[in-house]
Length: 336
Image (cartoon, rainbow, N blue to C red; front, side, top):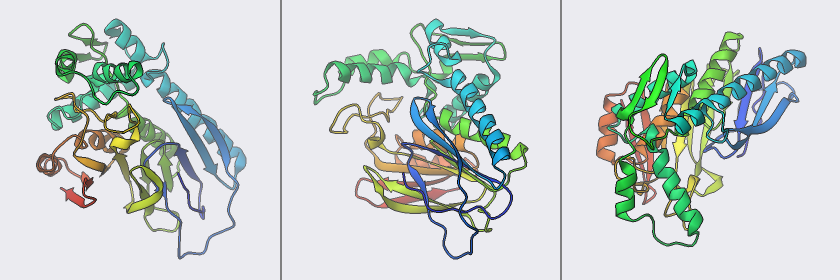
């Protein structure tokens, strides 16, 4: 992921960057900037992927304090949503089928996920984890297989995929069918981005671009113009194929080539929860929304949704904008 020389000219600015995301901050042109600042940095792993946080500030002590707060918040939320940590709240829920007195953030995010699932007629479904595991285990056993799962296996696993069978209350989350499990990977990065954005805004920061798997701009660039974000070509991260401007908005991109199960890329992580099949409709789908949680979830859902239904979903979802790159390389666009 490439980065251009965005320079801070007033107040403090936080830039959070993460590996393996679908966007890049584009260079700034046409305004005089101060000398570049050396960032206060952190590198580590977040939700199983390499991540980096960079703070640019003339007050390095203040930057270090804010950086520690950001990392602490990231770690706290990771301990709620991670599928890689055996004792995370989500892992415990999946293991036992029930979680008493769940963390408030888990309640909020499961509620958000169920809302997007209902809005997309099940194209987004947080209970997709059993299906994902079945695909992953199939290709782990047969790494050179040219075929996916047998239809009878898909049908059997799909009995466990139904967001409506998740009971949600302030003191309890539970599955109504044995063997169900949640994955919040299609929405949690956006949620974490939003929570850290809220924390930074509370600190008085108002010119911020956060990129922690999903990208959100708070306010405008310090020069007054919008933040400029480039969308990578699917399978070619050095090539920018579209430019998007953000002011107080977020953007997320989903692409089949992002996480393939096998070398050909035919079978990948973008699974349709209604059919159990891998998405084949678009090369990529980019969504902008008022926050990163929604951009993240809707980009996942719309990647498995035909264009007619995308337009219907966009019409009933205020603030949603979609740009889909179809299989011929043409852009399809829709907004409310």
